[in-house]
Length: 177
Image: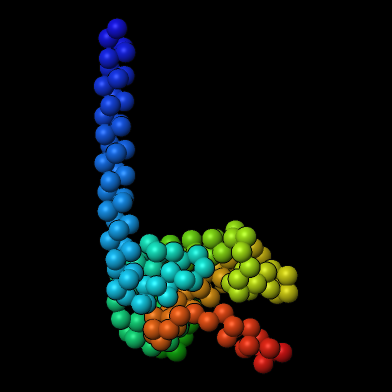
């Protein structure tokens, strides 16, 4: 009899915790939707395949002003998606990992995985397939390159405050060919 009452007590506590979690999750989702309605940049980032609402919020919260990154190399280093060369006195001392924002690296790596496993045809998935088939990169290197591409596009979206236009990429490919 004692064993049944103890397990019922524990289950009741777990049910209350789950209920509390669901209420809190709904509150966060409502707040994120409100922020998304207010800020066009968040909507534009959310429209990028793989980023999502939470990823867009993380990017906007961490970056604040995208104009502080003069070029994409600095941006990619801040995101932890490239290594930087240690140079002193004109001499190279090899490559090292920069200090970077781990949450941004996570957002872009997760976005790359979401694109790869997506069943929907999009320009990022086409780019990944191009890297695998035409460039013959390993899956890991292609995944890293895809994460960098998504990060660069996200920076462009934030700097321009305009939505991503996938047609622009296909037009650039046709001009290059």
